[in-house]
Length: 386
Image (cartoon, rainbow, N blue to C red):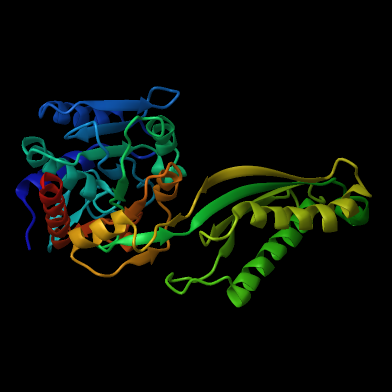
């Protein structure tokens, strides 16, 4: 199955914008806004506080009734230090694949959506289609929060949303939430020959990290479990540790970054409270017996809620029909879906490509997946016209 040349050209145009999260996405957003204007479709920009980034929201069809949103993020992850065989900002077609940064995550989907706009615009839609394109998803689902603060107060907001993250065009109804923090351990330095007179920040950090590891083992053994996930339980992970200056100095400072990837039914606040309680009740008193200024402080890094949409929800039923499947899946990676769901817009995930190709050098999506996405949207056009 071959995709339309128009879709391939649109994907090439989008990939050519270097929208790495550290950069502005305004050039891409301006291109999309001009493109929609050409079909008489007005769009609203929702900028960040710097004015250098923006979400875009548009409605195609009647604006006095609720429709279905097609959503995707416009930012991509960096290519720094990656060994690419071709220019990551120029789409290369080879062996039935499109190579380039964002082809899978997720400019392939956005490109196919934009290619469907001319047909949507000329149809007499009975149910509108909303477009929501966000910024800074890759750094903690940051940008869409600004858009949702505005959309939640609209007189008419979408009745359902499909996010085109890469699921190999399978309908995903759930994913885990994430909460990540940085723990700062404040100790007291001294000469290592007098170690008992100091408070070793590295060693106390290690004790908390060990407790986090024990939490993870407990979840793996005792649950709760959801067998529909590849990893059926909440996970705990420590990824960065920094501390100490020299071996003969008892370290005064240490910090470490850790995260929970939790099942939607669990409370991230309860998970954080447990590890803080261990640090405060088991360790801090001992530390302060030596130095009253020692202890722990905690800094949030990022968080997004899990997604959990019912199997029989209207948007699930519609997405399965559009994808021509009776099955649903649950995915390991996070999306903006949990945030969108929080403003009472039921959400599913369905898009071309595999997450296994995302964030890697030589990122690619197959032509067949793009064609399947086109067919999905063609069925959507017919349904919204009915």
